[in-house]
Length: 390
Length: 116
Ligand SMILES: Cc1cc2nc3c(=O)[nH]c(=O)nc-3n(C[C@H](O)[C@H](O)[C@H](O)COP(=O)(O)OP(=O)(O)OC[C@H]3O[C@@H](n4cnc5c(N)ncnc54)[C@H](O)[C@@H]3O)c2cc1C
Ligand code: FES
Image (cartoon, each protein chain N blue to C red):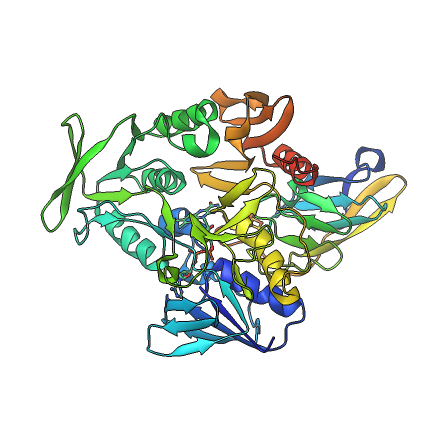
């Protein structure tokens, strides 16, 4: 292989580029990134960066003086791909043909239709989003967060710490219920209420009101919540529109085998944009977490360099973390596979506990809330347990 | 030299945290070696004594960067800076730490208590 092109210059792209070099690839390496920024870390954008405890320099993902010997084309987007020819079209009018392609274009925040262009309505995915949101929060008194996923729950927590009046509107039973399952989402909901967030669950939003600038959120039952700032946290969609004509198999993300190989030779996909086949689940599954990209980057690089001959170990269950207030939430596994869940240490009422999710008596997922040491032991156990065929 | 603990209370594969400023983590590896490093991860405020010990490396319990206990070097981000190492002395069934004179690499937002 003489030229490898990595599309997407963020976590998954950087880690795969790094893994290619570590695995001995010495050819030309081109990294194309739509954002103007060097690779930066997203998790702090809703937490310490938004709170003002971290600066932009702290977000850098590259090591000081790190030399990848790569050509960085930042501020340039890939607009199309011909998978058979491995030819990439670029937004600056150029094209690039490579022997190997790494697709790492991540995901984009879903927007609420009808709010485009209304000042004070934010989504949070990029550094530019976070800068704009922070500037707006510092001038605001009332925040309404629509959607209680990770990003919504974290922004609500950070905004409380900044002293704002915060309402979180969630269509489901509780914030984080999709990720943690309903039983264990309840103590997280209670945490937010203790910290002064007004939680409205099982509640639909009818519209965001205002003219040039937002002034409130109207709920389906007609209630109007006044707001200076609105954050829409209703999930993210994989950035694959640019691949529509590529010839690659697409679903909820770029469809890949369990080694990251796409349906075309010489092309792998990794990170939030990729849905790898998960043998334990028996289906393709898109993992939208930091460690998912980290674990898979090494595998994807090996798949690319070996032409798919080296078979990887099956991927481990996804691990993710979330920080809300001074609470560290850690989770590994698939909660929806479980038929029972029990608290095995601590006490949810005290804000520190560990819960184990089981199916037919076998652990399939573990949640730690301010139980870092014990969680680490469980995580290891789940990561090293033999993978069950689904 | 700071006394850390009686030898018997730190079995192989275990770690303890010393409440000095900044805190120090002492590890007893499966191979029977002792190592001491600053307990606070250089990325964020995590206790490396809570991490996963494997060979001569500890994996941070939060975001999985791995530190080499012998050198303090880190393998991959999110942590980018090495952690400070200290010398360990075992004498008369007691584990002691000789704290390093070098400045610590504390994460952003974490200060020495003496300076907080
Ligand atoms: C606010 C926030 C908080 C988070 N917190 C946590 C957390 O606490 N724990 C956790 O586990 N995970 C967290 N995550 C998730 C984690 O950040 C993602 O899983 C990770 O960023 C995925 O990396 P990626 O490289 O696949 O995608 P991304 O980081 O989305 O990067 C994709 C990159 O590709 C670029 N790109 C897109 N299209 C093109 C194109 N056509 N051409 C060129 N470049 C393109 C984009 O501009 C972007 O820079 C958080 C995410 C966000 C947004
Ligand atoms: S706190 Fe240790 S890697 Fe993040």
